[in-house]
Image (cartoon, rainbow, N blue to C red; front, side):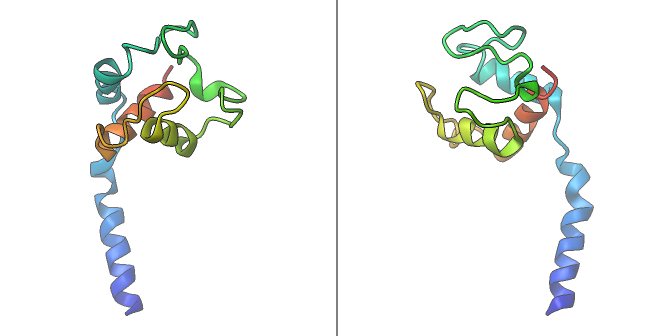
Length: 104
């Protein structure tokens, strides 16, 4: 049984490069879903906060340190006037979006 589990894990690791996040695709996802409310090139508020330097901030508006998990939860669940995007974006689009947000 342990060998079967180990083989399954190794198989997933072999596929990992195929699932690498793509910041260029994330920029497209941002433009299609987020840019109506958020600026990517400044911290100036549009409808929601500007996201320039998002992952460099000490804390977000919710007082939490920015991390993949925290930002993904905000994307999925929305909050503070932001609608949830958990069902509108695929897992790959969310990973791409995180990769793009890290470039801001």
